[in-house]
Length: 260
Image (cartoon, rainbow, N blue to C red):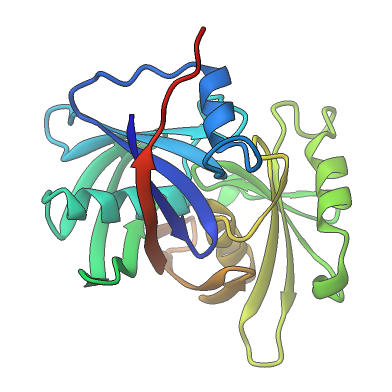
């Protein structure tokens, strides 16, 4: 199986062109591919499938545990860059887990194979943003709990993130957990514990988006890079939500399947 390894601000993915429908991966194989010691190493794996009517392609995202996941914002930006490399265009309309998405290739260096991608995210009703525990809970394509903390750089993101993520009485289906802190330069710093990965990732697109909506800050910085999130607030919903950030193709290769 030929694969491509992308990252969106350090949030990394194995991506496969599956328009012919020949790639049928089970959970164990996906987890093996994503393993950082015995595989390629990634936060998740994505298939670019043939387009249903009216779309350029379909995005299927799996977490590093091998299970099909919900929407991934950085994954959506990476797979849009991949589609651009495949010749599908600069402006793309594709189907994700949570419905239709539009993406725009803002910049792309053909030699370095990196650039900037802008991704349209789902609208969020303000009534669906709930105060929970010491923060907010909302769904931006994936569920996120967002909490302000002090001294984010030294905060126990993994320990506290895992504890909150597994609060079954509060989050029956689990949740991603984001910790935020305002920086002196006005940007909002974000660190995220992702369910499915079960660890801190260097960036999370749906998480950065959730943090922007609850804080009102359009300029954000994750461990892996800077983002901008544009949105409109009409009093009842956050609409016209766009996530913009860096994307890079790191390498490509061939995966040989283990004997069953």
